[in-house]
Image 1 (cartoon, rainbow, N blue to C red):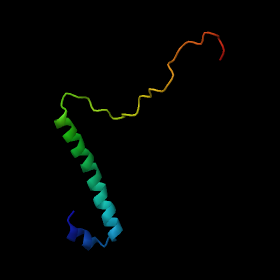
Image 2: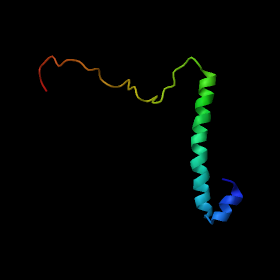
Image 3: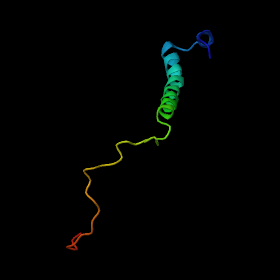
Length: 67
């Protein structure tokens, strides 16, 4: 939708900002994904880089039988 068409609809400036923001942010993510793919085509994209916790205790069997 062009600026002059939005002006004719009578939307407030804040509504116009929210409208363009809703269009722009998904575009930014798509461009970032495309650039990541082109930069490292053989790599798998990690969607949750903080998902591994090195400080987590390993799941071991309780040798004493205490729950």
